[in-house]
Amino acid sequence: MSELIISVSGLRGIVGDSLTPEAALRYVAAFAQELSTPGPIVLSRDGRATGRMIADLVRGALCAAGRDVIDADIAATPTTGVLVRRYQAAGGIQVSASHNPLEYNGIKLFDPAGQVLTAAAGQPILQRYREFAAAGNPPATRDPRDSRNAHDGTRPSWVGHQRVGRVATCADTLSDHLGLVAATVNGQRIRECGFTVLLDSNHGAGSLLGRHLLESLGCRVVLIGGEPDGRFAHRPEPTAENLVGIAPLVPHHGAIVGFCQDPDADRLAVMDEAGNYLGEEYTLALCLDHVLRTRRGPVAINCATSRMSADVAARHGSACYRAAVGEANVVAEMRARKAVFGGEGNGGPIDPKVGYVRDSFVGMALILDALAERQIRISEWVRELPRYAIRKTTVPVAAASLRAAFESLRRRFPEAAIDELDGMRLDWPDRWLLVRASNTEPIVRLIVEAPDPADAEQLRDTAAETLAPFSG
Image (cartoon, rainbow, N blue to C red; front, side, top):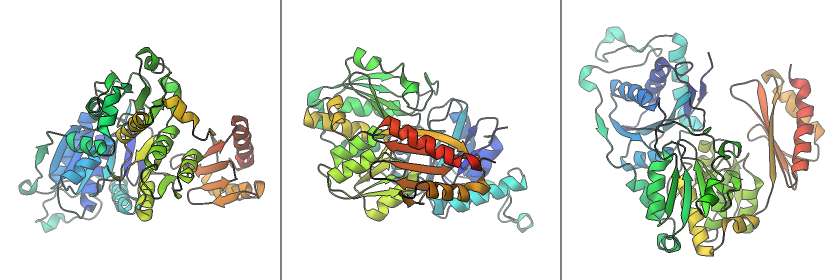
């Protein structure tokens, strides 16, 4: 069997293999048991074929734990965050495996503020889940009035029949989120342009709000994969190799831009009017370049995000702060710095005016607003931005050898500025290298960025050679 990919804010696995009904029930029970905030839980899913089945399990587990449920059915991950705030809920659960392949699904947890759980909030839940799993006990019915069945910490705690939670259906999942996004741009200016826009939702949840948003902005929408049934037409991560069949459709339909979402629509990749793949790193950089023209203040990104975004911030006189990789870490840094914008270079812009969740709809609206305001093609706009080449690889490194491996890098590159916020990041004036250990495998991931592709590849290869002796 494969292993579950588990973090403080959620889990993912292959349905029927690592992600079993028992695992889902234990995880949801741990979440419900550790929640101290009263109120209902918002439940949603990203449209995968297995989503309804898992959502049914989640809904039942929440009700059995005494929690009311607001069932939003298919909704994007950032929409879930908006709904948590709308209903003043105790939290939220999104059934999604994000960009993982079709056979995967997962569970993502939200706090009462409508953001993905922080490490501090998620650690007790993760610990409780591990206790349930280690005990190997199936979920057990418990009447809290019966002292003979006192909770021993190794079994999920279910309530009696008189305290079972109720289920309500969310009839309108879109309006609040649409209104928040629309309020960040000049809708009339965009509508006057009458843009043709291609949106590839790839049969995920993004088509629901995506079509509605773009049409409300006066766009003629060419929608690809608009049925949110999880029958992906291509591999779900919006990378260049996965979108080769989408690229020609942008100029074919006369679109001024191509927007490509992942299944739960928290990430956005962009193509220019000729169908050239700009990528996910450009999503955040473009948004920052537009937002910082009118909003003054700091921004926050993660330490694996392209220097392009930091350069754009500097160009506009904004301080740029880096956080450890992970949406919750970026959000924490944004809140601490009172950032006006932030996000991750995987296509995840975060606008505090909409919510502290990565949001593809924010990216689409801001990019269209900039094109309408400046009356330029997106290819022209991109040429104004700094350019870097990113190269990635993995190297097998045993966990016990990780510290020695880092010290070897320190000796190999003594001139680099070193930051150990998340793994080890080495910085030079025009390039950087990040080395991070995997949470699930005995490997480290190397990310290198430099102005020239050949220089990036050379630095990557040198770093990989330096780490090679530590694979045993």
